[in-house]
Length: 198
Image (cartoon, rainbow, N blue to C red; front, side, top):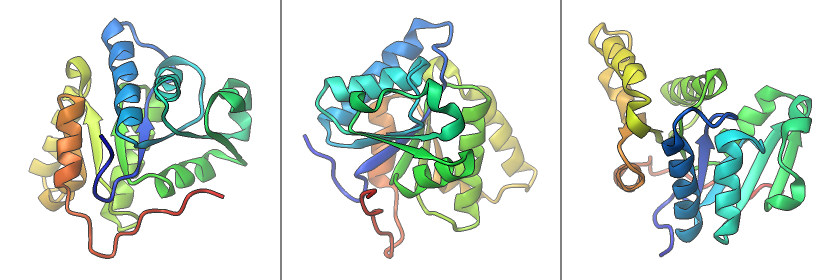
């Protein structure tokens, strides 16, 4: 099976920890396998630990492609360059986040901590101000994102977030559910896939 439509590269936000439930690691492995088997390139933060390392290695073990993007101050925690397709080191965190957004056609957030929360918030807020027009799915493993979703719905109900902005974020129950959302997402007609990083 090959990827279809306008999504060729998927940015994945996730923790550098494993979490305390085996299901998190299992689903991370499953996601990496799915990306590889369906010819989606993984774009991620370049880490070797936790769910970050699991997804990257799962993609590579299943014959896929991985672009890791790591800031220089986290170089010691990054994956070895020869373990993935390409590892890019950026001068700072802001450049890293910009490249991740530029190099991805859609985004998935696995469970994670403050860094993952920041990436989720930035991706949503940048879509709101038209810095990109790409979908984000929260992979709601074992209800991990239920509380955050309640807050988002509260923000909508209190008129801090227009209902229209919700088109860019989705709470997915499974990998198939997430990619069905991506398949049905309506990209603007002028949307172009980002060029491969050189």
